[in-house]
Image (cartoon, rainbow, N blue to C red; front, top):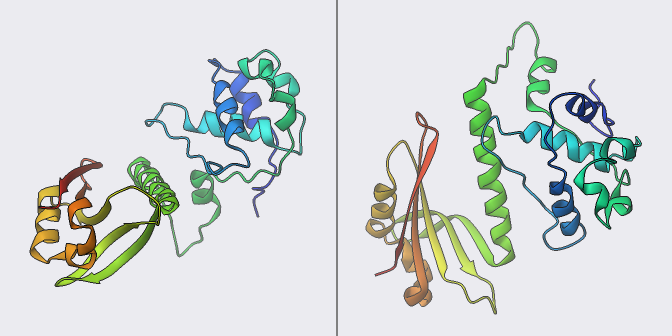
Length: 221
């Protein structure tokens, strides 16, 4: 059984022993969100642009099971007034999907996650976080019965939130125009007709081959 809680700072030690460019300013940004409404932070970067390094750095800084003061002493974060306040003060969970691949397999089941599948996982994480963040301002409905079918996602603004209602249709290996056409053809806006003058139609398509999303947004006519 692997250890995933309070794994220490050995990962960031290896990073510091390599060619390292100071990115510790990220810690100041994360510190500013702690115990606030923005407490859930997603750190995203392009592939091969240091997501693993950032994760190891954050773990080393917050992990309460180790003393990382010397690792950060010569970095930008050390001059931050909040540096000592949060240094090695919290329990940390560190999960590496590539590590799961090597640990959880047997003779009958071989699980393999290649680089393309990892990219899909990262895309899914970003979209999921965006979805949950929307709940701050919207009541979110999945597979809402409306018109002549089921809208994938309908977002209705909460009381006192001055934002438009949104109807979202998701497509796979088609195109965003087809998604918008389905919203109109199946009359999905009927469920939120009270927002007719403040309603956005959003069509999103994911191309599995190119690993890209296409999005089209229209005002309800």
